[in-house]
Length: 118
Image 1 (tube, helix red, strand yellow):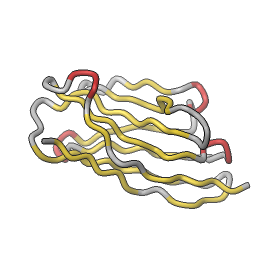
Image 2 (image 1 turned 60 degrees about the vertical axis):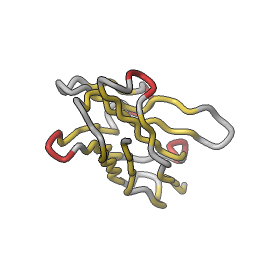
Image 3 (image 1 turned 90 degrees about the horizontal axis):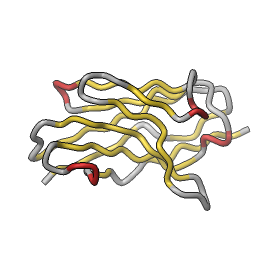
């Protein structure tokens, strides 16, 4: 079993910054893909940023230049640095990790709330 735990959410004013962390633990074999997704109120869950085991990153257009994803393979942890936050970034942020066993379905955390006030 794999456990995924996010942390670092909170309330911040527009223009502010936050850093989210996501740690994977348990029966991890060949952890490869790691990503952040978010679900705003009344909307579907969308991709925010992803990173492969080789360090290739991908970002949603709405966060390019403001958010940065990174990972520490030794700690099985992925980070998301959120800068210049906007009210429209308000959402529950979820972390997904994938292994060679899980495939694309992966493992999800419970989410962490990010609220940006105007």
